[in-house]
Amino acid sequence: MTKSELIKKVSSKLPYLAKKDVQTIVNTIFQSMSNTLSRGEGIEIRGFGSFRVKVRRAKNGRNPKTGETVRVPRKKIPFFKVGKELRERVNR
Image (cartoon, rainbow, N blue to C red; front, side, top):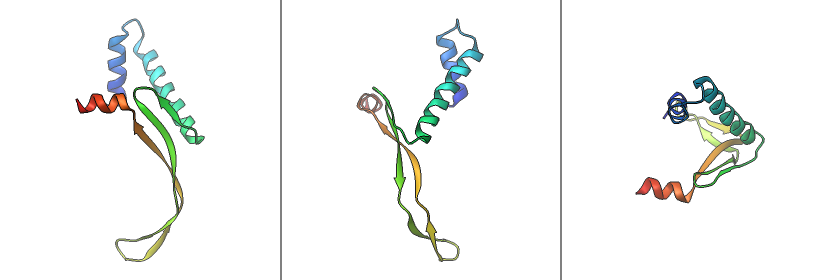
């Protein structure tokens, strides 16, 4: 599902809201989540899952073309852990 499909789905369930308002709501939610993760904080949505930032340590890698060793710097990545209810629903 894409963001535009999500907006259409929410708009169809809430016909009293203008599509533009639904778009603003969806964008605000995603922006808030992005801002929270960029500050290094976690997000927990009960019954769905949790988002957090993991730190990958610096390491040595290899350039596949030349075989030369290159230094891969430490980096932060967003990580999603599925909640129990969602996992069970998907596995039904």
